Image (cartoon, rainbow, N blue to C red):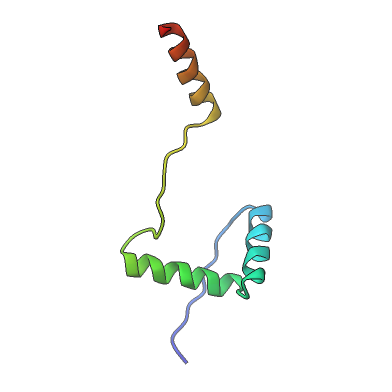
Length: 71
C-alpha cells in the first residue's frame, strides 16, 4: 500500500453537500475527486482552470455610477 496522509479542511456545509452530490453522480467520492484535482495541480504546475477576479456587487455599482457621471 502506498504511503497516505490525511487532510482536514473547513468549508461551507452546503457547498460540501452540493459537491458530494455531483461527485456521486459521477461515481466519485470526495477523496477521489480531491486526489484528481491535486494530481492536475501537479501535472499543470498550477491551478488546472482559469481564475478570474469578479468584482463584488458594491464595486460594480460604483463603476456603473462613475460611468453615469461621465455621460
